[in-house]
Each structure stands twice: as C-alpha cells, then as structure tokens.
Length: 156
Image (cartoon, rainbow, N blue to C red):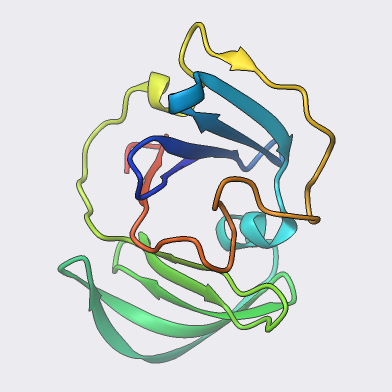
C-alpha cells in the first residue's frame, strides 16, 4: 500500500495496489470513501511491462536519483529513481491526464500499519463510482498542489 498525504495536512489517499482500490480520507470531516484506483495512478506503482531509457541524474528532496524516460503499461512519462529503487518523482506525458508526484522529504523508517487504514471511528461515505470521471479533493487533479507526503507500507 502507498499513502499520499495532501499538502493541506488533512486529506490523504491510501492506494492498495494489489486490490486496485483507493481510499480517500478527509480528516476535517472524519470520513473516508473507497473507490477503484485510476489506472494511471496504479501504473506508476505497478509495472507489468515497462521500458526505461536513462536520461541523466537529478536531486529530489536532497537525494540523488537517476532520471528515465519510461513507458510503463503503455503509458509514457518520466521518473526519477534512487539507486535502491525509491520513486522520488513521476510524471505522465499524457496531455489529457497529466499527473505528477514529487517527494519533498524522504525518511527511511518502519511505518505503523495504522497509517495505511482509515482512522477508527471515521464514517465511510457512500458515493457513486467516479473512477476515471473526476478527481476527488485534489487527488489526481491537474491543479493539485505538489509536495505531498508519500509513504509505503513496506517500510519505506
């Protein structure tokens, strides 16, 4: 699972890659909703086919990374990966669905499992399936603020 915290410090998304689901948590409303994850978001984290062409090096969040032009699951983009495989930046080249993720701080540490679940007592919201139709609360929106926190449940 991957957790992406919005820059407002309140909302976050939990991406369950294996299940193909995304949970969006609204702490200010003490609620959350679940929906199918957008294919483009999943493709950034779950490559079944891919080709990478090294284009150079960069520094993101104070950490050196190698930049690549990438084609992952038939989607073109650019990524910056550390030598141990941590994704520091990803950008889609699709003009109709531009997405970008970029790390602002990286800390290597064990992550509590509770970070990857909605908080106890939060109300699950029932909403129509909107996957692929419109973004929710800035997650995946073209004008979403950059610099969101991203953690993964595998300890990175």
